[in-house]
Length: 212
Image 1 (cartoon, rainbow, N blue to C red):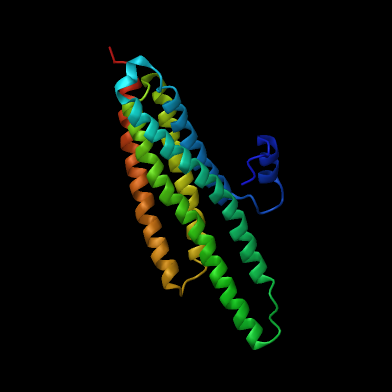
Image 2 (image 1 turned 180 degrees about the vertical axis):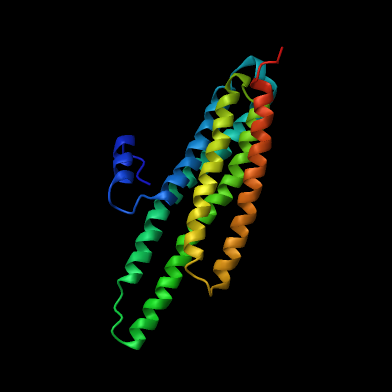
């Protein structure tokens, strides 16, 4: 993803009639935003006397989240490239049986790659989520809502990435690799959804005023 682009430029690209950046790119970007919110909570914790006893742990969390933020931004760009590779494969010549076979194999390989990129986004979301949970527990409690928003963004990122795994794998009905990838994605997404619900409910209990 072109991180030197302005937000308005990015939004213009998404709303254009070009298929990229599309849902896969936006999903990865949501994951990066989720990590960013976690980093913010860390930065609002470090240096505060009240949280001095957990400062080292928070710094470690921040470092991990920063690495994931960078990786997810890279995945956003990789999603664009993977889609372009699929389109390039469809444009290969098909005038002879040999060309048809080569084209078929290239389409299958590019499509599987296009499924693998969002799958890695789901995996990284699985890593971001417990880090957000941890910083929500030990970090600056005035920023609990930010940690919760991060959790929701992780779920959005993972769900969006799953849709891209699904659409690509479903176009490869005879591929064992695609079937295995889809099964793993479904398992991961179920865990992310379940864990997000538990984490957010825990945060809301802290934020919600006591009923009279």
